[in-house]
Amino acid sequence: MNNDVIGYKIDNNIVDLQTVKTKNIDISNAEPIYFNDSEDALEIIRHSAAHLMAQAIKELYPDAKFYIGPTIENGFYYDLKTQTPISDKDLKGIEKKMKALAKKKIPIERYEISKAEAVEKFKDDELKQEVLKMIPGDVVSIYRQGDFEDLCRGPHVPNTKYLQNVKLQKVAGAYLGGDSQNEMLTRIYGTAFATKEALAKYLKMLEEALKRDHRKLGKELELWMFDEEVAPGMPIWLPKGAMLRSNLEKLLFSAHIRRYYDPVRGPELLKSDMWKISGHYYNYKENMYFTEIEKDEEGKEAEEYGIKPMNCLAHVKIFAHKTRSYKELPLRFFEFGTVHRHEKSGVLHGLLRVREFTQDDAHIFCRPDQIEEEVIKVLDFVDTIMQKFGFTYEMEISTRPEKSIGSDEIWERATNALKQALNKLNKNYGVDEGGGAFYGPKIDIKITDAIGRKWQCGTIQVDFNLPERFDITYVDENNERKRPVMIHRAIIGSFERFIAILTEHYAGEFPTFIAPIKAIFVPINEKHINYTKEIQKELLEDDIKTEIFASNDSLNKRIRNAEKQKVGYVVIVGDEEVENGLVAIRDRKKREQYKMKKGEFVEMIKKLSEVKI
Ligand SMILES: [Zn+2]
Ligand SMILES: [Zn+2]
Image 1 (tube, helix red, strand yellow):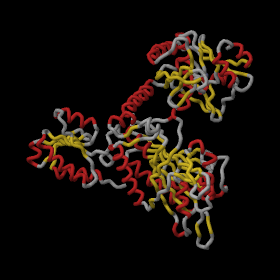
Image 2 (tube, protein in one colour; image 1 turned 30 degrees about the horizontal axis):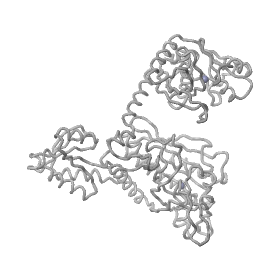
Image 3 (tube, helix red, strand yellow; image 1 turned 90 degrees about the vertical axis):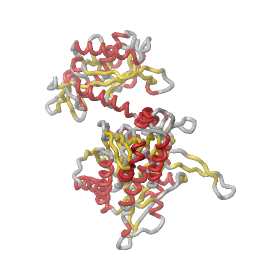
Image 4 (cartoon, helix red, strand yellow; image 1 turned 180 degrees about the vertical axis):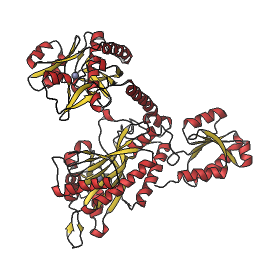
């Protein structure tokens, strides 16, 4: 089956065999799509799986009516309605029916009718009437498999035997057309793969991801919380989470200083006039929060201010507050800048999607001929950080879009500088032609975590626009005013998002260099408590936090509770340890137990915590 062709790629469009046949399409130059787990093949397989699910539901619930069933990242869904409601517990039965239909190798056929005929054909189906309203043109295509027919553009596999590796995942509600004024339909999510192995691997990854879910671990390890009474989407950091974050901040602060960046800090609120100059007031307003503050002068009305959604403007002002010479460039300003961006409540998701977050933001002001060298330095910085956390990553350049500002020359120069920088470092990268922002090309950095998931984190963005809008200049060697280029860059992206990713990447077992609590002491009984307190105090001298579990619980229970905190070292102290100046360690990472001199232990923890990058 692996060598079977299930479709073709023509001008970047996927066309199925049925369409090739019914429309007599020339495939002499087309690229065949084979039945495997490639992205293109999965597109065909998953869309067909959505239809197979609809066919199965129609057999089990004959009154079922279907709206739309697209593919999504990692799977598909179908929106539908039935008289008897479908819930999660019904999915097994539907899946079983799907597998039975798949085994029958039912051919999937395509034919066309006029839209008027389609309106008549589906006259008792109000959902299909809604779909028909959305289809442009006078001709519609219909796919048929057995007794089941559906309005559809395709693409589909030739017959149902290609759909044996399917999994239905969950039932949710979805408003018809996404409009909360409309009726609520049932949405069923599922996924499908070409091979059994790929499906099994994916399901295993999902299971692992569930265990690592940062929302679950954030609660269990008491790192952060959300409180609807305070504000949705605004994280509240609990002591251990704040310590974790602070460890990360310290590490990154020093890493910036060591790379010749200057720390700066701008205000949270800026007058709306500033956002008008930058353009945010016109292009980004619905994502911003505004407030009014009375003008200082008497008799004047209130003036509008915007809470910053990015940190750039104050940095531009810092550049412009005095005359800058070419000799000073590049200038590198960095700020752990807290920003607010409005997100709809439906998309808020733990620490990954929030309304308030803090970026590791920096702006490099340089001459156009310095872009390449600066980008090389940033890429090297990225590499150091990602290696430290054990992430692999990939990069993509986005080039000039149709609608853009700046001369051809400067675009070419900046884009080439980005490419040259990547080439000099021997980095592989993808190119998203025309995918850049209107004000300059960029490099996006996508990291891969311990269980193979990809996350978009940092970006390096060249900007010709803001220097222009704020008319900032430097004086060159001929005493002429010249326009600097601005490079916006964030490496981890935001502390919130990165900590969510780190929590899932490490499954809550943070390495000692960022762990909020480096060790938990468990004194065997009361007379050993003082000994643990002494070690604790010694470590506090170096800002290293530990905990002592000395409650009335039994020793075993305290050890178990300590291990549940996922700290690197659980340290047990009894008579023997106190008499000989030792500690008994349960080492989480090495999965070993051993004893050490107290002083050696303190030195080891200090050394592991004192990382510089
Ligand atoms: Zn379809
Ligand atoms: Zn910026």
